[in-house]
Image 1 (cartoon, rainbow, N blue to C red):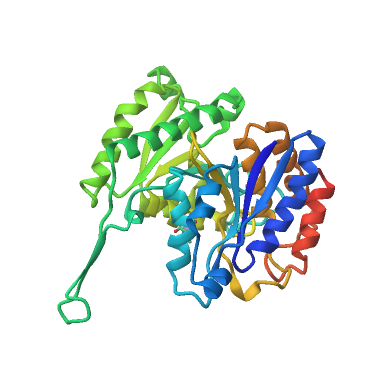
Image 2: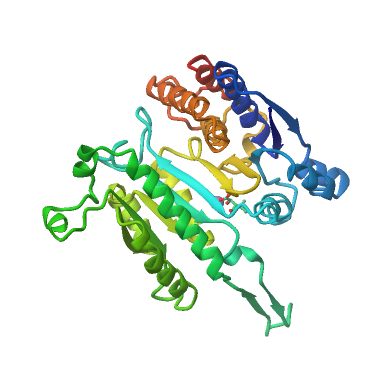
Length: 374
Ligand code: IPM
Ligand code: MN
C-alpha cells in the first residue's frame, strides 16, 4: 500500500491534481496497485489565513510517505518567493530531490510551433540538477537602499552534487539506449556515421552537457571535468556538449540532435520552459523531483495560473503524466505504461483540441477521456 501525499496548493493546482488522481485511480485498480492519498492544505490560501507556509509537522509527515504529488505553487496575493521557497524549494532541498527529470516529447496529434518537426524529432530528456546552482540562496545586499547598493547571488556547485547528477544522466541515457533498435540508431540525427564506426565510436545514445563554460569558468569548468571523467564508464553513450545559448537555438532549429541533456539548476529551469513549448505547451509538460534513495515529488511544470483558477479550462495532461511518472518511479511499470498509452491515445484522437485554455475542452472532460482510455 503506497502512501501518497497530495499537495494541490494554489490556483489551478487543485483542478489538475483532481484529474491526475481520477486517472491514477482507474489505472491502479486495473493493475492491482494499492495506494492511499493524504491531502495537505498548504499554499497561498492557508498562508493568507494563518501566516504559515508549511508547518514542520507537515514536512515531517511528508518525509514518511512513498511519494508526493504536487499541483502548482504561486498565489497572486502573496509576494513572489514566499511560497516558492517555503514549499517547492523547501521540499526539493529538504528531501534532497537532486534530480529534476523533465521529458520533452511531442506526442502524435499535438501541434508544435516548430515548422516541419514531428514526434520523431522532439523526444529527449532534460536532467536538471535540482539542489545547487543559483537556487541555494547564497548572496545578499550591501548598502541596501542607498545609491551604493550591491546585490550578489552566488552560483554554488559541489563536486559530489555535480558528479551524482552527471552519473544519473549517463544511466538514463544508457536505459534509453538499451531500448533502441539498430534501425532507430541508424535513423537518429546523432547516430554514428560510417567513419565514426570505423574509428570504433559506435555509440547508441548521446548525452549533452549544457553549460556556459566559456564564461562561468569556475563552476562550469568543474562540470566539464566531471563529465570527462565519468564518460569512459559509458562507452555506448557519446558525450557531447552545448553552450546554453546555442542549446536554445538548436532546440528550435534541430531538436532531433538531442537525446539526453544534463544541466545545472538555473539553465535547466529556463530550457525546460522552451522544451515545454516545443512539445506542445505547458499543458503537456510533466516533471519528477527525484531522490533515488528517498521521497520523490511529481508535478506538472506549469505554474498556478491564478487567472484561470476555478474555470475548468486548464489542460490536465501534464498533471496526469506526472502521476504516470510517479508510478514508474515507484516501480509500477505496467500502471505507468497504461497511463502513458491512454494519454497518447487521448492526444492522438484530436478530442483535446489545441490544449490551450481556449480549446473549448474542459479540464474535467480531458480527465474523463484519459480515464476512459485506460
Ligand atoms: C519550476 C519553477 C520553479 C523553479 C519556481 C516556481 C521556483 O519555475 O519548477 O521550473 O524555478 O524551479
Ligand atoms: Mn521553471
